[in-house]
Structures are given as C-alpha cells and as structure tokens.
Image 1 (cartoon, rainbow, N blue to C red):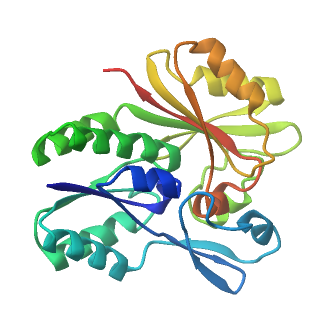
Image 2 (cartoon, rainbow, N blue to C red):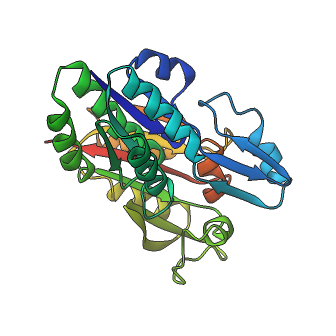
Length: 271
C-alpha cells in the first residue's frame, strides 16, 4: 500500500482531502502579530486576510518536525510505503524537515521536492494520487513524479514586493511596483523575474503568453477573495479553449508572502 503525504500549502479543501483517501496533509505554521497558527484546509482558516492586514510581523515557518514524525510513524506502522511531496526546497526548509523526519522514522519513505508551490503542488499531488489509485508501483510513481515536476510551471504577479522581500523569497532589484509598473514572475524551483509590465493590459498579456499552448490542466489562483481575475481567466480561455480552468484562493502561508491583489496561474503540460 502507498500513502501520499504533502504539506498544507497544497491548498486542498477538507472535502478534497477526504476524497483522496490515501492522502495526509501536514500543516505549515505562520505568525500574525503576536499570535501563532497552523494552516488548515482551504476555507478553514477564518478571516486570516483581515488579521494579516492589521498585523506585524507576518511570518511563516515549516511544519513542526513532530508533525512529520507522527504522520510517517502512523503510516509506516499501518503497513504503508510513503511518498511525501513538499513545497520547493529553494523557498522553504520543509523539504529538509521532512527528510530528517523520514530518517528518524525509518521504513519505506521517500521525500519529493516538488520544486513548486501552492497550485503547482496541487497539480503534482493530484497526479501522484491518481497514479496510486491506478495501481502503479512505488518506484513507478516516484519515477513519473520526477518527470512531471519538469512539466509544471507557475506564473504570477504581485501588487507589492514588500512581503516577498521581507520573507527572503526575492532579492531581484529589477522588479518594480512603482507608478504603473507591476512585475511578472515565473516559478521554476525558485522565483524568476521576467518583466516589469506597464499597465494592466501589458501585465495580463505577458502572463498569458508565459502559459504554454500545450497545457493540459490549469489553475488560476488569487490572493484575497476580492482580487479580480475575471479578465485574466477569460484571456486564458481564449488562448486555451479546450482546457478547463480551476479557480483557487491562496491560503495564509502563501498569502503572507505575496499579499492581497496577487494572482497567477499554475499549469501542467501534456506528455
């Protein structure tokens, strides 16, 4: 038997977690002001955006080591082989923490650095779950995941660079949010600056152009319920009319780094 473990930045709802019966989700941690929290399933984190807007500092942290140890121990003792897929090791210490926990527990556990975040992880974990349900072997699932990682990309933009810089996730001095300029980024393991777009239309054009034509699945994500992605979504539909576009709102951990108004898309390419 194979179990899939991931971290809460994947952004699944409670119903989605329940429907993926071989899935366990380890919570990431975050701080808003003087209060500390664990990230729960999508829709279960309360009014975190409102609290975040009024709090200082706002920080994130990798899962507590004991969470990984307890999860791995329970699964191994139940007879499972474990594949754990976590957010990019270039952006978080979660990968290192999971590897350490796996060494402590023993058993048949493999940690996969997804080299992506959020909706990109959602795409990769879904693939893993489906492969397990189809009866692929442990080694075959791992082999396919390594190939699939290279076919997943994220393109995104932000209204402010303050939180990305404060959190240490960005040190590119070329990115600007002054006047009418807004940066466009890609995520390929780490955050890559692509362009400072002038005006809303140029920004959307640049982002849509970065989504390849051989995309087979697409998730549009936004930070904050009020962030309008209708035009972005429609432009993607026009470019990729045969691809169904899922919609997601980022959870607290990712929101702390990109802030309200940020939006983007995660895609996975055809074979």
